[in-house]
Length: 268
Image (cartoon, rainbow, N blue to C red):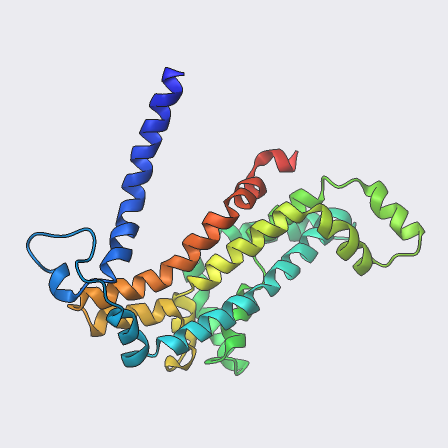
């Protein structure tokens, strides 16, 4: 019992140390710039104000950035369907070159994303997809890591279920939607959450593909805010809070699904 209490105390201290910067950022977003810059710092705002958040939408195009981020995040959810279907094909279909193609897919995980950005941009440019949501979302619809997770998970499903459905006359799409997807609910939930977080935090690729702020995301808008209002710390704190709060909320609500999805016990 004593050992458990000590462990809980240590974890509590570490957790408070990790969470304190986010707590400070959130509270500072309700302070004035004068209060943040005073010599004796305060934790809680003396006179809470919403002027910083109002300034984001009045002086900056944060409403447009928020809309763009939501659109990109929703479109990115298509990757869950694409990756799950690819994982199903690699796990349950027998075709020539299957192992070679799967190794080729895994090999792409060793290539840094920055290396492929220039050729990917040239391809999108020749296809006329620059400065469009399609050009921003399309390259990320297939991911090697997600395909690997789906393939490993679906591989544990007994072939008897699938063969019984085929004997009854079910098609492959029906088998995938009504049998495979329900049985892979933990990994599907994990991929939906990770896709949301990646889409919400997307920065470099939208910046490269966008010629103006018409397709900028919140991450890009926050970077522009930092360059334009480098001394307005209260406004920066408000922008950062608006950016990070949805991710924290999603993780807090769905942390059990995240842990369950990445648990190795699910792949045994």
